[in-house]
Length: 387
Image 1 (cartoon, rainbow, N blue to C red):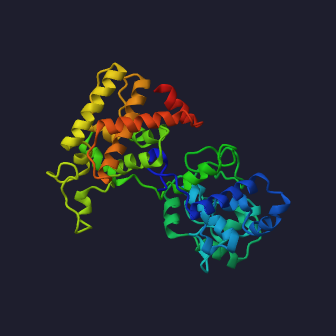
Image 2: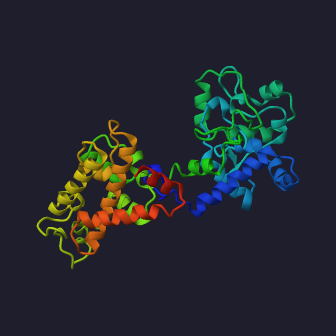
Image 3: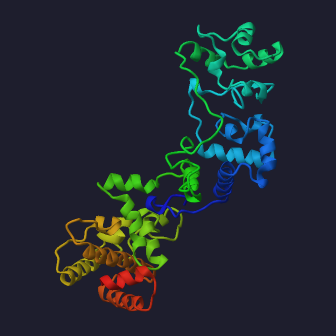
């Protein structure tokens, strides 16, 4: 349901995604206007953690930070879109979920004001942590032994081993999120005008959406399926949602045929509703059944005669649409439209307990085309102009 239309979904919004999007949009407004009167409370809270700009780039855990309610939710939502890529030479000491004292992240403003931000700044040339005297000699700031011990003892042993065995380039860091380094995901910079609610929502949903299971089944049966075109095809025409629904159910393999219903309902016969000779599977109902075959042959002859072309309707054309580059675009449009309506005719015939009938179908198409003349929708104009 959360997938885009081009991926077989319906672009449905859920409350959690919408809530997170608004929180992240608030983050963007704050970063663009940090001195706004509306932000002074948040500024005061985040100043105790080095400022909001700095905190967003730290590898934090909200449970280990002195923030509550709205700001806690804000930081949780930010972690959904901003991935903290680990690098030993850009590993912050402060607000780090791995560097804690009494289960709380550390932040010492005096150290930050003197430019001590990264773990690699706590190592000497030999790849060992500074001793207390070496640290005082290096940075020349008054630090109590207890404060020094709290910070240095909190460094994880894995980080110590990693930094002691790698070369250490001069540390580079910044306290501000800027226009050029504020990328989230593969989108435009976070602070640019192009990063709107839609872009943010797609970043949040990227980890919760999945490819429809039917794609793997159809790919095993048929090759070279253009799935993006197949998913979007029903939306190109001015047709009712009922018509689109039949095509989407077929693509998702959730159309209620008897061979599936018999597993859940005891009063259903598995035989085809039209021929009553073979089990009613999806492909049999819409293609293999003799009555469906006759109907498609009549439609094929009609389209070849009206369009002055030679093409053959196949099961791939019925299931996924026709996208042959050798056929002109106008003719492809008409063929796919009639195929879409024809599948709906088979569907209605099934539930009205009738057989597919080409003359009944053409009567329905005539009323459909007459209706287009009274519609002001742009798709209706396009459909009418190409017919």
